[in-house]
Amino acid sequence: KAGVTQTPRYLIKTRGQQVTLSCSPISGHRSVSWYQQTPGQGLQFLFEYFSETQRNKGNFPGRFSGRQFSNSRSEMNVSTLELGDSALYLCASRAKGQIDPSTDTQYFGPGTRLTVL
Amino acid sequence: AQSVTQLGSHVSVSEGALVLLRCNYSSSVPPYLFWYVQYPNQGLQLLLKYTTGATLVKGINGFEAEFKKSETSFHLTKPSAHMSDAAEYFCAVSHSPRGSARQLTFGSGTQLTVLP
Image (cartoon, rainbow over all chains, first blue to last red; front, side):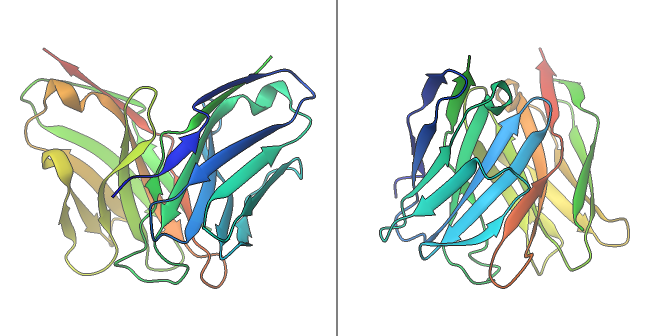
């Protein structure tokens, strides 16, 4: 089974621009979560999508948004980029949207490294 | 609220020595606990997890961890370190803020260095 894929792997943008990152979950997985990783703040939860609906959101400004498509692929968008948005953005998928210990495991993609100049 | 504390941001061991990475958690409900490893310029790879059942869990690459509820700990161990174990390790607790939503709260990570 192919793992979680993220595109692009690297991005360079300038302040004020917007960016869209893409994530394809493991085949059959329906839940997709996004995390931001920075040296200063560590790994922080952004949001989770299941069945094209945002189920949960972390403590990030409204400039961070996302969506999920009917095939479970997800995109996240950051508008009006700031220097502090430079980070590794990680996508994770899990099998179901219900609490089930046997499937309640998040599998991560390789990440998209975003640099804001 | 859930939180994870990893004691020691950097740990160095000699090749062949015991690896012990410490993790303590705080959770208002029975926790699901995870250890992930991250190699440079890569994403997170699942090492092992505890959800229910046996408190000693075995993972990949010879790692294991023991869930101790009384100590709120989930320390990661490996009997004999290998050079390829050098990486950053993250402990995480999974919780459900509402309904079927699920999110991970991570510790700050421990960088493991293996000395020849």
